[in-house]
Length: 274
Ligand SMILES: [Ca+2]
Ligand SMILES: [Ca+2]
Ligand SMILES: [Ca+2]
Image (cartoon, rainbow, N blue to C red):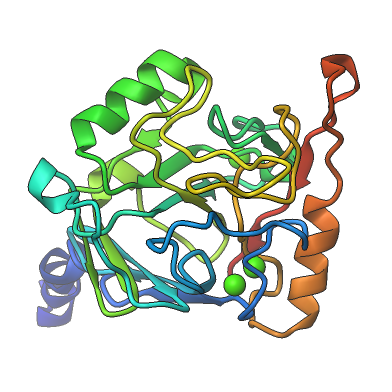
C-alpha cells in the first residue's frame, strides 16, 4: 500500500471529531426596537433598565463538544433578584427563547411558540428545537415546559451552562443536545422577560398588558392574543434600521381582545444562514 493511501484516512480520523469546530454565524439586530410591535413599553420598576430587552447580536459558535451562543444586549446585564444564589444563572430580568429550524421544509416541525409567547411561525420555518436561555434553574425550566407546554417537551434544549458578563449572556449547549449546526439552519430569538411567578398558561414569562405596571409591560392589551416579547431578529439580520420597521410590521399582525374566537397570532419568520 502506498503511503498516501494510508495517510488520508488517518488524517480524517485525527480531525473528524472536531472537523466543524470554528464554524460560526453572526446575526445583528438594530438598536432601539425593544418595543415589540412598536408600541410596547417597559415595566416601571427600576430593575428593568433601559435597553435590557434590546438584543443587538446573536453569535453562534461551534466549539467542538459545545455550541456557544452569545447574546449581546444594549444594557449591562445585572442580577438584582439574586437568581445565581437561587441555583440559576447570574441575571434576572431577561428570558430568551431561541428557535431553530434544521430542515427548512414547509410545515416540517412545530409551528407554535412556547406557551405564553402568543405567537406562531411561518410554515417554512417550522422548528425542530427550542433553546431556553433562562436564569431559572434548568430543572424548573424543564418542569414548566413539561407541565404547561407539553408539545415542546421533546424539542426543548436546556444549555449546560449559562452566565452573563458585561452586556452579554452566554449559553453553552452540548452539541449532542442540539445537533451539528449548518449554514442552512434557521434561527429566531424571542426576547422575553423572566417571571418567577408565571400564570398557569405561561412558561416563566412576563405578560404585556394594556398599561405598564411595576412588573408588567404595557402597550398591548389585557387579553392573551398579544405577543409577550419585546425584540426578535429579522432577515437579513445585519442590524440596519429597516429591520426595525420590518419587526414592528410582523409583530403588529396579531389580533387580541375579549373575544378569543377573533384572536390572530403574530406569524414569525426565521433568519437563515449564509
Ligand atoms: Ca434590538
Ligand atoms: Ca423544520
Ligand atoms: Ca429586532
